[in-house]
Amino acid sequence: MNEGHRHTPTPDKPLAGRRVLVPRGGPWGDGVAASLRQRGAVPVIAPLINFAPTNDQATLEQALSDLADGAFDWLTLTSATTVDVLYAYRAVIPASTKVAAVGETTAAAMQAVGYRVDLVPDRDNSAQGMAEQMIALETEPRSVLTLRSEIAKPVLTRLLIEAGHHVRSVVAYRTVGVPVTEKIATDVHSGRINAILVTSGSVAEQVVEQFPDIPASTVIAAIGPRTAKDAKRAGLAVDVVAERQTVESLVDAVARFTLPPESETPA
Image (tube, rainbow, N blue to C red; front, side):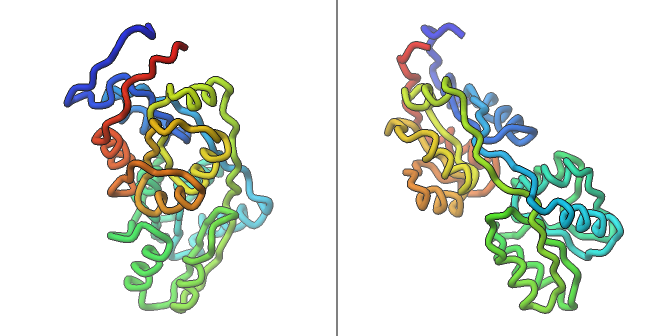
């Protein structure tokens, strides 16, 4: 692209020419990139986190085998990354097992790879909100498989057990940081990246670690109040918070915020 060419935002292209860092790849990253392009932005996909296999794969494989055999009434998912694990293992979810996803991002990730979702919390997109809704729905003891990350607090498991349900809590993955290329690091530090999307506490930690000198003009946008809280705890100054924990809400929030003009910095 010619660096000298300027892009002026318009009502239908509010992010014209703005470079927005998308911190995750895969189908999710592609979907976010498409939403940004519709609004005129130039998405820069730079995965900051990835999942690594659990240290106890035998336990996960056994749980997924039992899942396929119909051993569980419910399967719970508290992150979109867990969907990547299910897909990688070609996990089979029988019709008799209901699926609960913590929020619309996780639910959308499930549907994108062909799985169904039966429950998304109405209001509180958190493990606690999901547990409360499941407990209200299920008055009899049920068998539940909770798949979680290594670092997740077992809030969901604890609440379901306290309510009398039988829960098998299994670590599905570990979250690991992915170093960005030198060019992306330089583009962030020089202000050539106009906005950075923050989609989880783990992403926020990587942003802080990998980009120690983010210009004040760079907009930091968090996907929902909970992520904003985690980002602030990690040391990020958050400028934009999506009202809902969805990709569309996040991109809309960034589009409404007046981003700084395109950087004059040459490539």
